Amino acid sequence: MIIIFNSHATKDNVQELIADIHAKGLKTNLSEGDNTTIVGVIGDTTKLDIDNLKSADYIADVKRVSEPYKKANRKMHPENSYIKVTDKVTIGEGIFNVIAGPCSVETEEQIIEVAQDVKKSGATLLRGGAFKPRTSPYSFQGLAGEGLKLLLEAKKATGLPIVTEIMNLVHLDMFNDVDVIQVGARNMQNFDLLKELGKCNKPILLKRGLANTIEEWLMSAEYIMAGGNENIILCERGIRTFETATRNTLDIAAVPMLKHKTHLPVIIDPSHATGISWMVPQLAKTAVAAGADGIMVEVHNDPPKAWCDGAQSLNPKQFDDLMTDLKRRVEFEGKKFYI
Ligand code: PEP
Ligand code: MN
Figure 1: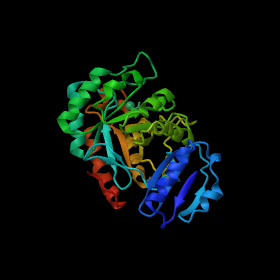
Figure 2: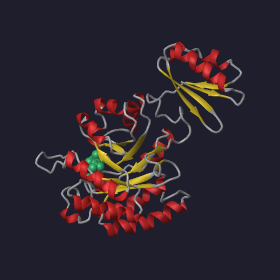
Figure 3: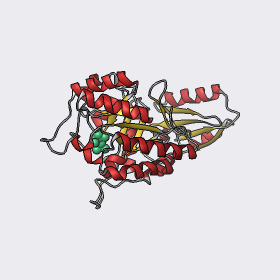
Figure 4: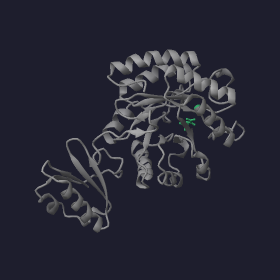
């Protein structure tokens, strides 16, 4: 349920109503916009009488929220959310961030070199997997703790905040110095992991599951938010369809649909969406037109020799060319590119 206050409402009116609602055992979500104040009510709202609420002269309207996701719902929070990663890097509407780096951290030279290259080209965050979810148990599984250590060295060398995937909540303590924790497609519905991430205060990059609907995806975001962590960035990375020409099928329509349904920032991963490096720049550019808040793209210093996902990785020169083109398009849309 959402309770919309009118312009006569005082802060005391809002606080008193919130206290009444809490006294009935329900939770609230306060959204104070420039023009409207909204209190979202979460829980068994049959305990509240809509007509009674509407009768107060400081209430403009009261409506039920039919969607099962509440905190992630734009109706509860009409303004866009911004996710502050560091003092310099914020993700959200009006800013276009590029997260770039290799699929997996391989060696110190590799990660430092890629980090320096992508920074030079304008990337604002560095990606790199240390724990890799691989289809085959015989494939390279990531350097685990050693990979995180190398990633932190690359962060120190470049100042770029880092994004890396968590696969198991037993590793959470190792992520203390990670700036953004990624939940990969295969773990989008690992509810125990989501609940645990809800208790920390770090930004979470939540990728869409391989065959999950937008509603299921938003319910996964809701799991994290219900625990108290509202710092979520959604990442569309392609879904399973009958099409086999590309690794996955990029659901570009998910971007405007998510922008309609949620206040959370949305980015696109054109690398995992296609699996083919020459397609990546074109799809990265569609992200701008679709209204995404950024992209996450795989870049490797020597793609043919990459230990993982070389076929979809751009080399530093291809990435730099893409960034020049993107900058023009992002600025044309009236958004900020470099921070
Ligand atoms: C990744 O970003 O490294 C990754 C494994 O992606 P996804 O979870 O989207 O497959
Ligand atoms: Mn990859």
